Length: 222
Ligand code: 3PG
Image (cartoon, rainbow, N blue to C red; front, side):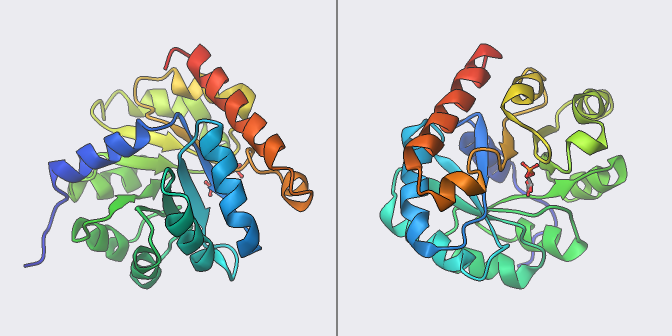
């Protein structure tokens, strides 16, 4: 039977996932061979929850490789914009799905999926569309240019029980400001895997960035 609203258990699953690391690295990986060493470096650096974006032709293979070879990682898919890709990502081993925005179709698909889904919102009206279907956890994107921490604080007034993973423009020196907010469960970003480090296969450098992110999050009190 088709469900109309998201269950409380699914919200609890999102909370559990987001409690595993204060930062979710948002990954765009071109070469499948780089997937496992990048994932291992991030896990080793203290960040086990990894979002692989569907922005390259190899994204599904990258997800498959990490899911298969890095069991300590929780690998999910990002930049998912329709139910067909949602399902393909699950079939490739994704533990969770993230979309940059929402559509009614995606929200309904997520309600009826056993896989964790974090829908992206930018505005109060989009938030209300999600809430109508039982969602209580959202990606806030693009965070910095949408008012950043000030907007999230304002969302906390009318929507006190809703929590967010902001992404978009967040860097190591601003992550702590977001993480200090009561309605922020974790933050996401691409800063942990700069193109140059990937090109140079500098996995130790990626691990250092992960450690630095963890230590700056810890200073925020999380
Ligand atoms: C995302 O998909 O969450 C963003 O691309 C992350 O934004 P950033 O590149 O500014 O970290």
